[in-house]
Length: 212
Image (tube, rainbow, N blue to C red; front, side, top):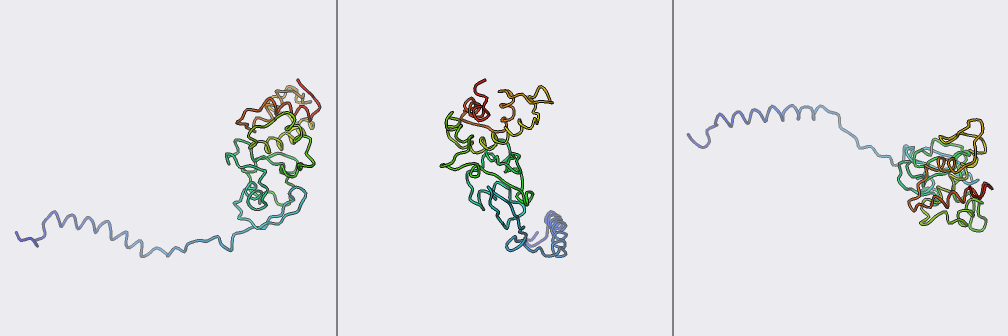
């Protein structure tokens, strides 16, 4: 048998490869050409917000979170990005009087709404009572969670004043101010330095309740 003689094994292998490759090539020829999609110059939404009392006008990708709009577009970096999954509370801001995790919501969802960040609560020269209480009672250590803790605490006291119940509320008709209520309502704000007793003391100070 000469070297150029086609063996039975070679014939079968060649036929098998052709059976696989030819249909794929045909599909590739019949498929329409795919044009790469680009978001440059398109797909942007106009978003108007009132942030810390100031009207702002933004052009945003509709997928932009409120957190990223505040930090990256408005440079309000007091609001922190922690877990970016709504589990730590570091990104808490106040929207229309209610505290929310800004990493879990899109900026376009809050068109025309009022947003308050830690920068809008007070300034170094004019601290909000809750900010002052956190300083007085050492309600922080590393400070990373503190903006979210303070925003959450401010809105939380409004919830209690409005008799909005929590899982710890005993009487749904009237919310009793207690450590159990405070701890339950602040449970979405994690302090990895474990300054929880001091945070509760600061909140009690602002509420005028003193020590339990």
